[in-house]
Length: 334
Image 1 (cartoon, rainbow, N blue to C red):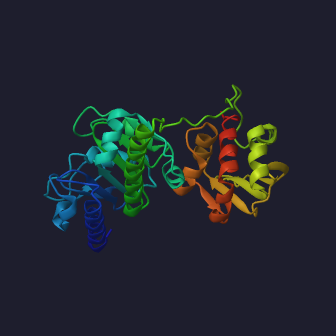
Image 2 (cartoon, rainbow, N blue to C red):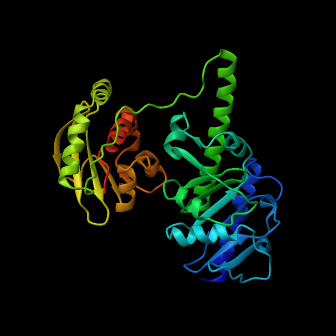
Image 3 (spheres, rainbow, N blue to C red):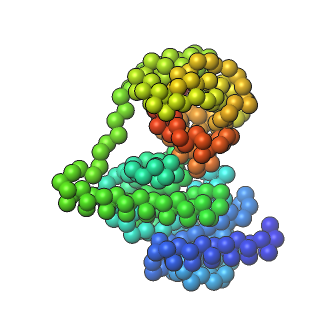
């Protein structure tokens, strides 16, 4: 990689650092930012730097094995950054911050399920992991959390977001800070009105003990049976007049199943990859979806799944589609 490219990465880090600072997502000398340069090296903000006032000399070129290629002192969170890059080869950018309201929320809570639609689509359910030291010394819990979501919370410490570029990471951190702020304000209103602000979302179906072969005909047949037998799905499909063709595709093999819906009921199953809507994902993501480890809407917005079709159009069927995705958990895979 040429020096000019590294300089461009550093300039991008400087711009994102300033944006985080201006949006009050970092304060003082906390937080760190990195960008993958190539398969072996990254650039990472240095120790004791202010993200709102970064200079190019504050950003250090280093190897993923820990070797620093410049004289400057690298961030104390270099283990966190290097381990994430090693475990997620598609990740090219990481931001770690100590956001105020997010930290406050997770001092009292272990998870967050946003109530605002946009936040729910973009963030999904946020699970936190325990952090017992000022800097990450064991990245394993963080790696596990990032397998199902592109953002994770370290209790008593901060948040870490990974993505395809730094702006993606910034948006995740900003969205989470907004979500916990809304939650806090809603609790104040609820306290004044004497109501409980946090209602748990109920899912009536229970995953079966049987596990299916991924994308097997048996699994598809049972998806149809469970979907068409579900009373909640019938009501949602009728109310929203959900009539469309939705296909699912396994990225590695191209295996495709398409479902034709009429008023929420599946009336036909085929193998049409040219369906109105097509969801394509690799095997590990589909496994996580069917085993209820990740929400398909969130996987789509975080670019783990690829949705072909008019997202604005499918959004009017958000409620029945959400129910379908819940029902998929009743056909877990091996």
